[in-house]
Length: 461
Ligand code: NAP
Image (tube, rainbow, N blue to C red):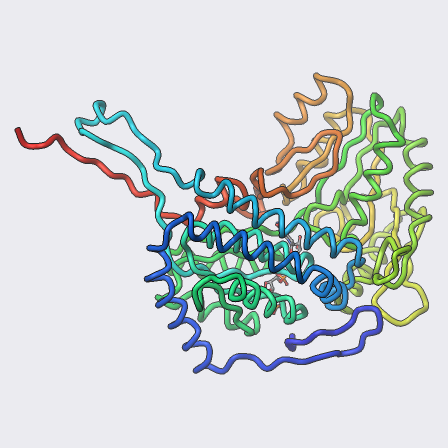
């Protein structure tokens, strides 16, 4: 894919960017390695101060950056502003709490015949981050903020359709006062990720993106024995039980499926509704989905903008056509509108069967699949049959149902009576083919650290 900003509202290519040459890439990796040698010795208090300064810079730039996000990938300006605010909060959160996450862990020295014994967390060096376009600032920030606080150095290979956001990330950390080359953006295509990951100057990688990209990066990392965190696809279940308030549940269901124009890994994608409330749920949910305003994402009144890329829209359309061709029923949406840009309407489908591709895969657009189920057990059985296990969502006032859901759902995150969201404060990640490792919180920060065991014997008498 060419590295370019293309406006999804019009399809117009606004700006193209040259890829780094082999010499430029080598130079950037050399600089990163040099930066890592000195940056790791800076104090954590100093790094926290730089992170707070980055938050100040981002706050100052918030309006321009939000518009840049919307222009590059089509989310509503309102959503882009929320994304930027979340990044500011994330930077401040790691500045405030990161030092505590890095404290030494004391062991009982006497048990191991030592005078002193502890685990100390040390940075591992240059970490490659391969990131997607769907939350172009937040995805990169949720890697960068904890990694930089921990004393690691970042090189970012961002998605090819968000180069301006990618370059802004590098500028932001420089302007905040971080030492040169502690965070660099690499404008390279996906096929050059392998070369960077195999490079001895790079210690580890994190990838957020599709399953094929994860399989490739995970395979290479295994070959060169480097740590990797993979945040991949999701087809999150959203389960609605009779005891819940349907007005609230359907409000959140609409938001869950259409947030980010339906292009979030943790969008609720498969809705399992108990038969006692299925009719009422479908009536409310379909009406609310149909009432959403689809249009120019820069307009305040718009709820859902275009999909980010032409191929992304074609993929969504193909999933819907496949399902409809095999007997699914369209309750609203289902067809692209007759207008320029890569729009696809909020869509509700019922009658999903396992012959349909969407049953087994991930639809990255505002398409809700709704099942009617006889019990929570039936919902969990179908939900857990999917190869992904990222987030999950239950709506129930019943204690026993909540307990069963938490125990039985195969997902990295289980949210009850609220929308699934990422927070800097709590771990984020999946199981099964949604990937492995965690981002965010103390767990995420420690993924790219050497947990070094220190054992100190008794002093000579
Ligand atoms: P993608 O094609 O995998 O792209 C993501 C990033 O990986 C981009 O920077 C891309 O570069 C790069 N890439 C693509 N193929 C690669 C390969 N073979 N080797 C190395 N790098 C490669 O993903 P997408 O389709 O744009 O994004 C949507 C997917 O990401 C969905 O499946 C979504 O669920 C997932 N996602 C997961 C999370 C999570 O936290 N679990 C969060 C957000 C999104 P180019 O742009 O240059 O191709």
